[in-house]
Length: 352
Ligand SMILES: Cc1ncc(COP(=O)(O)O)c(C=O)c1O
Image (tube, rainbow, N blue to C red; front, side):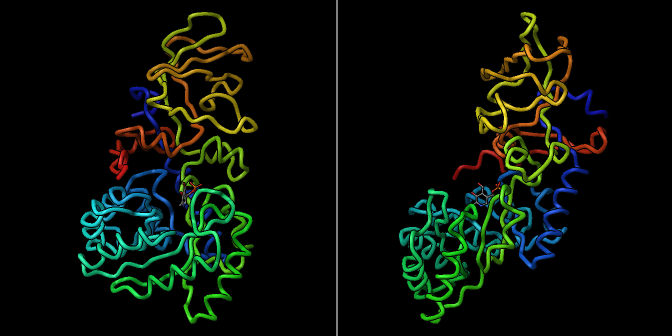
């Protein structure tokens, strides 16, 4: 089947582009001897995770237990959870996950450590722990190398838990300084740092300049999006996911309406320097999707010389592709416009 004949709206993924994107970052990591641990938040598909592993990735990264459970059920044996897992409701699901796969978890506090310790005891299975530090993003992470050391000292006291190293997201400006100081402090305390894991597609090709980094976690690079293009980390012809939509109305000269609203494209805007509206229309790059209702996208055509007709299928590069994956039950893959498969997005909607 030709992708031009697909029912819309639907995300369509170009597998040749996916494979080229995977190969490019894997070659970079191989060149600099950095382990690659892709974040599956972008695709949420076991089949894509297997492509990444087959190309040389050392394991995968997930954000939530339920997301990781999908990947573990698909047979993936090395998973890092980059999330503080907290509370008694998490102990049993985490123990079940630990029994199925080799698990590492990044934390920044003792409450998360307590939950994970109880889960590891219940599973009778080793869990490796990384300490998350803040390197400029102002999201979470310990603030000082001394706080990282104190947490590591707590970790090594506990049965079934091993201290594995440090983690940050993204690889912020202060990462290098923090890693250097931590290495000195930890070595005085006789604690080994095996792994230093950093993440983020925008800075992925410069992490080799940060001394001490051993692992890169990237997600968006597999599909890319308007944000990635804006950051300079990819070009338009490296965007692998296009949302196919149909023009359902042309109420006036400069307005078109498509069958893709916030349920399809998400409400994420991009940095104003990267673009306007809710995604880039490949066939009409001057057009602006300026408003979304749940099932309608409203487009301003005033800057376009050529304008779309009712019934025409147009393709959109999303601003933020990970949230688009999360919105869809299924998507299609293709090569050169010929459909290869319809895939259920198994790990979508997994918030716990
Ligand atoms: C902890 C963590 N690591 C890695 C990533 C991957 O970032 P990117 O999609 O920019 O590659 C994310 C993205 O949100 C993240 O939260």
